[in-house]
Length: 136
Image 1 (tube, rainbow, N blue to C red):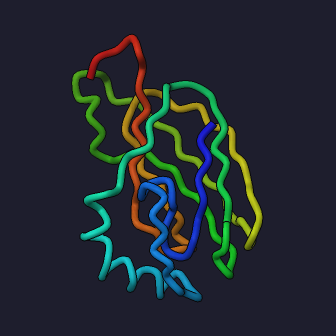
Image 2 (image 1 turned 120 degrees about the vertical axis):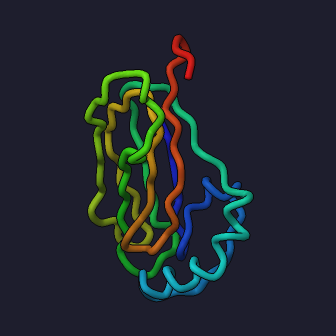
């Protein structure tokens, strides 16, 4: 299981649990905040790692004062060029009200993914799905 928490304009787990204490009332405000601050914060961001297969992603809206969402999708230029191109899955949680948590069951093959919350204006974070038996 992967668990992630949203605060205004960010996911804590992807930024080493460093809460920025942003104050925003809309995704637009978060986009503006992240345009100013993401370059410096990105140096400390880390990809989440998980083994390929089925698991649950639990997403919490810890204190964002409006409903947020969650969007997991393949990175367009993923590095599977030595293999035939496969269609990679995409997953969404449409609405997570303030103070609530939602879960989604995913089945992810080995690849590189991006995840974010468009409704919370977060940056794109990374998720690396690996296979213990395979080599990149």
